[in-house]
Image 1 (cartoon, rainbow, N blue to C red):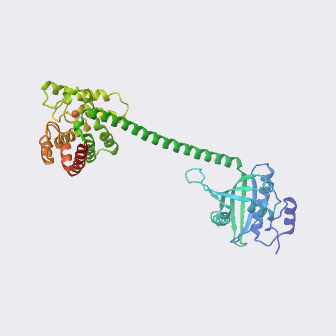
Image 2: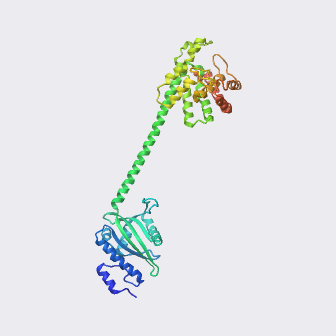
Image 3: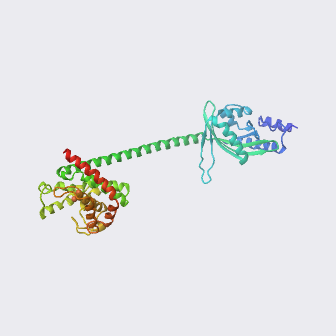
Amino acid sequence: MSGKPDLLSLFEKKFAYRGRILRYSHNRSLKKRLAKAIIHMDALEKIGTPIIPYIASWKIGRTDIWYEFTGKGLEEILNCRAGDMLADAFRKNLSQQYLYRKQLDSALVSKNVLDKNQLAHARQYLRRLSEKSGKSEAIYQIDNGRDTVWLKDIALIETYPESEVVLSLGTLIDVTNEIQLEETLAETKDELEKHKKSLENMLVKRTAELHDAQLEVVTRLVQAAEIRDDQTGCHNKRLSKYCSIIGKAYGLSKGANWLMCNAVPMHDIGKVGIPDSILLKKGPLTADEYDVIKTHCRLGHELLDGGQSQLLDIAKAIALTHHEHWDGSGYPSGISGGDIPLAGRITAVCDVFDALTTERPYKGAWAIEDAVAEICRLRGTKFDPKIVDIFKQSLSMIEQVHKRYVEKDRVKNKAG
Ligand SMILES: [Fe+2]
Ligand SMILES: [Fe+2]
């Protein structure tokens, strides 16, 4: 059975119909639906809208596609006449396809750019998907040899099982400008991202350089002070290690502990202001001379004051408070308990332990257990009880440092 000849010839004449469905035997409701759709789409095109209407069709489960109707605009874009040729041209010229789906809570489009090899599979997949959902949405890039054009395609999908035919009633709209703008924006975003990354890397590098420069200045300052008072050997190195062990066990952050360990070698920097006759005196000090020695805390604080870095801030606090006592009987300010900065309290314990366990011009080196007993005896009077407890708990690590550096000092003195 064939379709009504009068309808076919009318459509061939009026709409330059080159399709297949009206030409052959098909379900009546399908033919009726198609005829109405062609009339509507033709009317739509005549309004002069930039939208290009089309009706595509395929057999259920088959891969080939043909067009029942195409707006003039598509023929112009593809540079060919309507009909089966157009479907071929569309396939051939389609170089990229953006699949997109609308997010539930926004109008954002998630894109997936496919290359030519992936397109064949994607088209089949899209077609099966659209048969199920009743709609299809995609963006195509058409390369017709003259220009590159982007088309946004939105279509209603209707399936006619009796005829085993699917109709895709769609509209195409030229979105070349929008896509190009989107691509330019994406490129700009990439550039900005790269620029941001390189600035961040530069900042990390500069900060590290600044840290190194600060440490170098500090090390040289401490070395200058040690030249005058060379009896202390590796005192500052051991002290820094002891403080690091206590700071870590106390729960200081890595950064805070780093600052304390690198600041502590400056605790006696104020001694540069003490005359040689007192600082290097072999015999016992008079009370007046001892008072002069005590001024090294404030001298050190003044020397380190006005700095711009956290390192110098902590060094200043340690220089001023490492001779303060937990019960307030220390110097130079006589402050007590938690009023003494933590770094000052930690330095106080480690400084005394090192002084006791190493040889000085006025005394021999104490055995470690005697020094620990002395520290414990002064728990709660001279020293913060919590720091003393942590010190005792960390003794095995402290002893290892002591052994390593005392040996280094011995070798150094022998060589000297
Ligand atoms: Fe001191
Ligand atoms: Fe010291």
